[in-house]
Length: 401
Image (cartoon, rainbow, N blue to C red):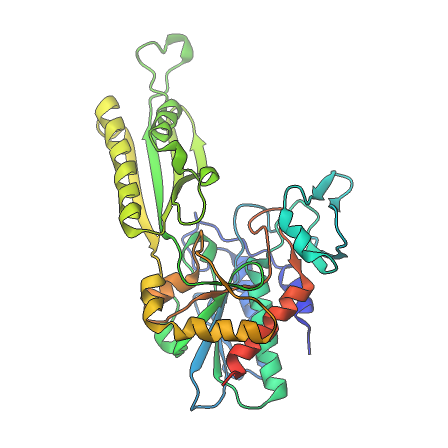
């Protein structure tokens, strides 16, 4: 039987960054390659119906007692576009305090002064990168933990719930649930294994939207530009300055929402701005969309109709209203956490998961910890011991009858 660490180190060797500019599903070929490998591995484990569909989603079933609930476990295969996911150099270091040298030649360190949570992991074995890429624990840790739990059920036998497994592409660009076959999946309820430090369980998340802004200018040679040139980059900066400064991610926490400028591409002739808009409260979320729309209208009044185009697209909504009528799903997970020695902590997600969308589609789907930290960046890490504990939690969820 493969260990969860062996699986994880194999999966991170696949470059599965998603690509928002792509129109395909999955958005990148690397995700399809990993999906095919996972389906084959599941078949080898004895999951007879394991397969990858035409959209790159991977499904499979571990049959259990028909008198028990059918429980789904879901994770996503893609990694975030925020940092490179190619040629990941993962290694395991025993952590005994202080800073971790990730890359001696480049002088890159994982420092306790920057990431105070390191102090919680003394004596553990951390999987880290060389400081030039992300690790991919978000969410290949979830994939590895789910398959290790599935193989545990297959080997130990005994009475357990039927397990439905689902691995999705493109979660990081908000498309993970777009083509998920909820009806065919056939679970009574599910959990995404897509969280952070051990003990975390999440059943409320941001309402989320993405905004694309296109500013049109006019390029004239700077030597003869007076009263003729319209520099789209400067108008774009003016537009951004109209949004509330205090509602940026770097100034918010907890339930506070934000406007986050995620990307800029520009020239005098045309500039594109990309934003994500987030808030837990639906009224405040709608207000934020009103604010950004009003800023666009102001620019067009000032510089002329059509100067700025704004496209807002809702991504997902707060799952809390879908979970509250069936809190037994949360209770089951919390009981499993306590049984394996975790202290459950319910926290609001300052982000989202596939489970948010799936909950609105009739599949209650809270989010569970996987053990990783510092997601979406070069200083991502995950303790081996915490992944192993998360596997025990998943097995307990399925066997605690």
